[in-house]
Length: 429
Image (cartoon, rainbow, N blue to C red; front, side, top):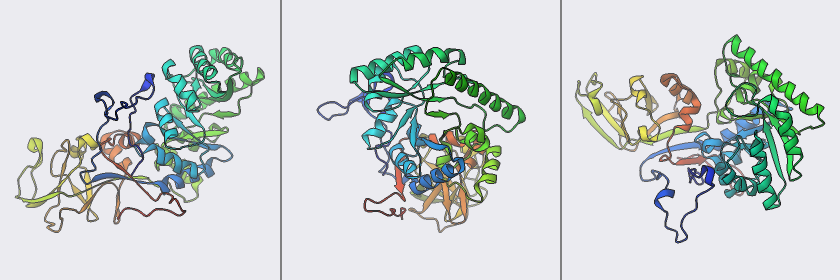
């Protein structure tokens, strides 16, 4: 079972929220219950995470991989994923929130953890005490982290982010000299890294490629300006998974790989570049979404199961009820796009609209489907496979959103992880 799945990620500006001293959880700290009482789960193959990290590390050498495990490891379970990525050669981790980094520390995750955005003043002390590496891009941010570091008597490594065209967060190039000076003038801070983020490295068209090259040119200019001031941060980084694969000049000393370590690639151009470089090796999707049939009933031709009576059964059919729905990250839109699940190694369509807690599956005349049979919504069964890319194509979105959208009611079951005495744990039966 994943350690601490979706525990209290709400603190934001105030830092982690603690339960009451009497052990009774207050209403405002309550998190969504996991559905261990029903047969629906996400299975996370930790050996796939390790494999993917190791493969990406080989592809980007001599640069090194920082594994992005924000959003609870893209919905996979951050502590276990972080450890598996480090085992695969990642030199550090990256998260979006102070609470995410602190959660990793509480689960015994060691090594550098980079915060990808400036934190608020109220979270600065937690960031420093948790030995996280803050990203900074304002004078106020520098002052807040320096103040927290002085109060704790703890020298803190920081990275400076430059906005080269993403226009989300980061310092304009014109502000960089003053920010560098503010950082190096604080003895309690160590200026470790300088970085930027690429907005269309996964783009398919010439304009996107040109824009990415412009971003890298701007970033190179900033790096050169900083060097002329006699300041030489030890880590320079710009590339996400797409940039690391499709733009070798974007690798610098480190790449930040998110979706790649989970077994997916963002877009056709990146996929083609990966195939050309990987020599036949492939990434392995790490997450499977599974459930079991809980009820079956024979329905006559023309019956219209589920809300809205949206689809008439084309023949007398066995309809199987499966206890997972849109509250768990199975969007209603999948029904209208012709989504199928796997039961008994066969693709089977939905019999009606996805509901909050359940789906109904049209098994046709197959009377051999029984309660307890495994249902695969994401993953492989027999010779068939359904991927997050398949969902994304149906929904007009990206694999990131599919994976992150699997809800907190769904427990994460870790398989193929390291055993305490060595070796790997077996997959679930």
